[in-house]
Length: 100
Image (tube, rainbow, N blue to C red; front, side, top):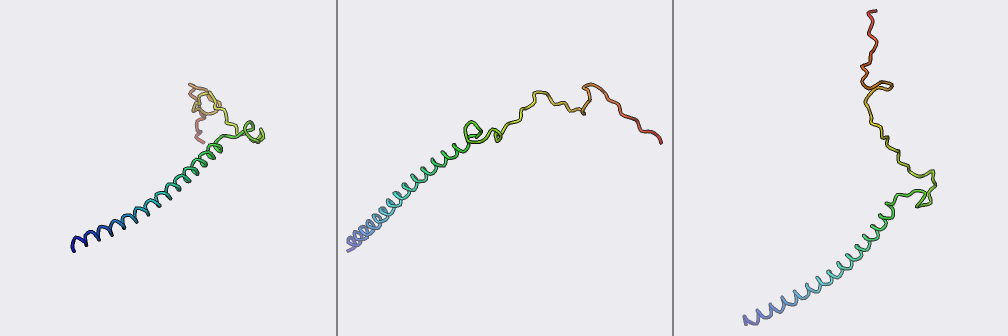
């Protein structure tokens, strides 16, 4: 009798495990499908980003020449922290205050 109960419980447990296995398999198939869809979306979005990140000007788009974004040329001269119209090495004089 005890042996029959154990066998029955094992069979019952086997069917429960088999049912869970089928559920897990179906969930796995759904996740694989969702993953492939998300990878496709990612690929499409990366392609759009690549297309949109190209700087547009009148050569590679329909923009007019006047709409081109032009970078300002950087000056090659070194900046000297002097007042305008002053010379390097010149001490410079200012008017002294009067006693009036």
